[in-house]
Image 1 (spheres, rainbow, N blue to C red):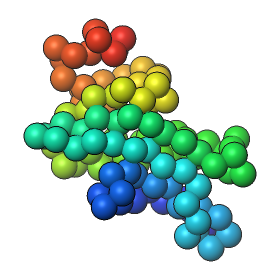
Image 2: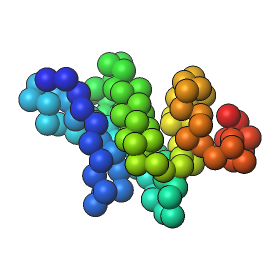
Image 3: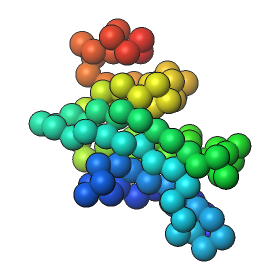
Length: 104
């Protein structure tokens, strides 16, 4: 099965599900949601799933969902911040007045 990203609001995180049956949590991106902003604070991929590009798929899936929901992104997590830096088409999700603070 193809990996898929899902929001787990009760856990305050996006998860990427992978594995043979497509149901194993391979990684997550923790966030804090408040007043139209989502602050990403930590991203982690299980070492058993490393080297498969799942971190990028997780970032893209989470940020695509955030865009669809009309939220602004605060990328405190170094991985999410670096991913946005490599994919400038997502920089508009970060409020313009805060981009310099995140090096974007």
